[in-house]
Image 1 (cartoon, rainbow, N blue to C red):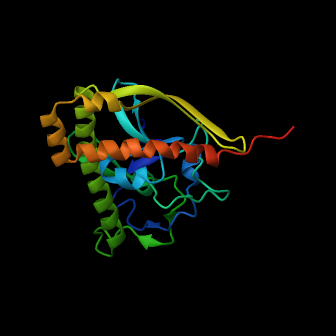
Image 2: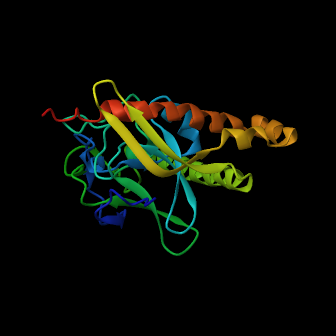
Image 3: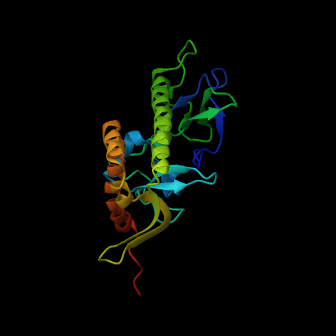
Length: 240
């Protein structure tokens, strides 16, 4: 799952080059209008599970990622309203961090980057740096969000490794239909196999209960019921 999917012109935030740059709130989430699957991290599983399906997806390098489904077609996000405002109580952190992101420079050090093409940046809004050229309160809050998100990425990777090692993931077809003719169907994603889960050794299940992995697994399983919500958000079928 690409981590730079929304970023048209990601560049390192430079204290000199961007000293006078300001940021104002985005009017909507149009940047995510064509996104049907969004990465999620384990720290938000419970919040996400109340409104979206959480599934697992294979990436091009053979790895596995956690994603929440926001659409049926690849080019349409069903959680945006007609004005491209996010239409749900919880907005995934992957969306909330835009237009900031951590980038890499070939070392272990992460670099704060911004999407210079984002219309939120300009001469209006909150400054990114104070009069002494130090990070403003607004920028410090961004750094807190990104640092926590980065920590959650590592925790999510560890969780996924445990699911793989226990051979718990299986491909599943998901289907949902509404009485008014709306429907949703998606193939190719992975879910936890409940039968396989029940065969795990008692000691391992106890360890996962104490470590929180079981809570994450059941949040994922509970969330699959939200696939009906995707069907509900589909446009009504055209009448003859």
